[in-house]
Amino acid sequence: MADDKVEKAGAATAAPAAPRTVDPAALKPRPPKAKSPPPTLDPKTSGDLARRAFVWHGCAGFITMLLVCFGRFFFPRALFEPKTRFTIGYPSDYGFGVDTKWQQKFRIWVCRNASGLFVIYARCTHLGCTPDWKPSENKFKCPCHGSGFDAEGMNYEGPAPKPMLRCHLELDPTGQIVVDSLKLYDFETGTLKFKDVAPGGQGPLLAV
Ligand code: FES
Image 1 (cartoon, rainbow, N blue to C red):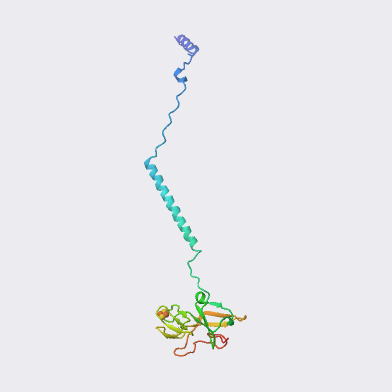
Image 2: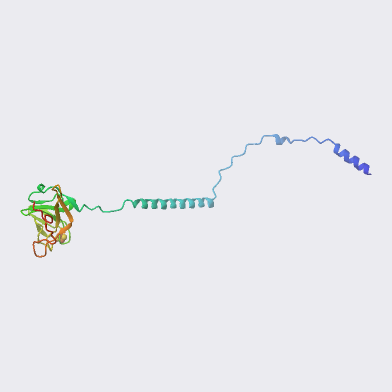
């Protein structure tokens, strides 16, 4: 019995393998794949993308605005006032009468009379408007409320309560007139004398 089993096993191992058969259908070339349609965007996902783009654009705009504001610091919105101490040339440049050539630039009039040369600060003593020089009437006339001043700046009509102020004058080493429009001389009330005049060749009047 045992010998039979050994013989059967030997016969099974010795049998040749059957040849592999190939399905002829498998050898046929495969038909080309049909083109797949473009992927459609998931409406949920595309909404996310749009929101993200919106946030990024918002951030970029905000940062740009900050940069512009930062740059604006370097260009302050400042008023550039005219100089308050300046030269206006030599005394011989000014004849008798009122010279208005510095009115626009420095808000002054340069005047000369028999006593000498003086500079009136062109500000009405009522509410601060700039009067106009009227050569035909030989007076300064304030356009705001009608105050009138004579050629020396003395008030004589309208609401202006006192004469116009005069600027401090001195001569520099080259002989040019230096005007200081921050140092203004006022008249003593009821007199024709100026307050705070220091002795010497400087002050509201140059005898030149
Ligand atoms: S401001 Fe000159 S009259 Fe009033």
